[in-house]
Each structure stands twice: as C-alpha cells, then as structure tokens.
Image (cartoon, rainbow, N blue to C red):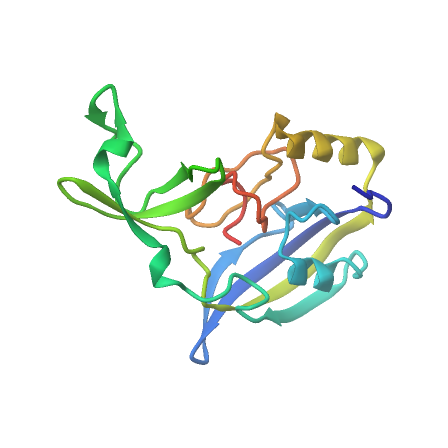
Length: 201
C-alpha cells in the first residue's frame, strides 16, 4: 500500500438525500464531533474523498453524488428470508439482538462479512435487507473542512494495524442509530469495509 501523501481530514457537514426533487436531512456532524478519516485507505466513498481531499482547512463544500457514485440502486433480490434457527443461542432465539429494524452482522459461506437490517420476523423466518440504507439515493453533502493535513507516521501505522484486523478502524458518528455504535479511535465512517461501525454512508 502506498501511504505517501495520506492526509488526516476532519469535516462537519449536513447530508441530504435527494429523491424525486425532494431533499431530506439524514445525517449531521458538527465541529465538536466531526467525521474524521485518513485519505488513501478506501474507507470512504471514492467520489466523496475525491471532492474533499484537495480542499484546505476552512474551505466550504456543497456537492452531490449520484446513486452510481454512492450506493447504487436498491435491489429487491438483496432482501432475503433466512431460517430463524440461524439466530439461536443454546437452542433459544436471540430476541435481544434480533428484532425489526435491528442492524446485525452476517457472514456468508466464503467468509465475507456484511451488515443487514432486520425487516420482519415470523414463526420460522427472519427477513433481512442487505441493501445499504442510502441505496437508490442521490446524496448532497454541505459543510466545512475542519482539518486537513498530512497524516503522521503513527496515524498511518495505526490505520494499517486496524485494517489488518487488530481493530475496526471506525470513528465517532451521530447517525441516528442506523449503523452501530460510536467509538473514539478517530478514522470515521463513510466506509466500504463491513465492520458495522461509523457513519451511515
């Protein structure tokens, strides 16, 4: 991995979805709890990073990402019915973690990990939605660059360590509970790796 030129970036913004000409605020970060990431590690949407990485501290931004640049179309085939017995512990269904609207980690036969939203639960089935919550949406980011500087050697080493499996590498967020809990190790969300932390996008 070429880490030359990796930057530490912190941004505060409002994120809107745009559907049929209507805008809806879905996430907001502040200068006190910004979205933080290191560029060049693939943790953010590529189109988002490309818009931000060249901006200086204090710069304002207002840009849109098409659904193709963001999370693609909503796909009905990514809504699956799974056997309820998959979610049992010691012979009992895991009601504490598996309930409608819950975001849960899953793993396929190849060992790939991903997050899913529980849609419904019946007597013998659990229906889950593997689509990203923002699939099918045009995204509009409006905000300010709070910090933009070269990442330190320690920050880069820590990120490589997290990506190698010693941590999830996710940071603080305030996304309304759609995608896991927050932590304080400082790289932020907008990621495509599937640990279930960070922001909703």
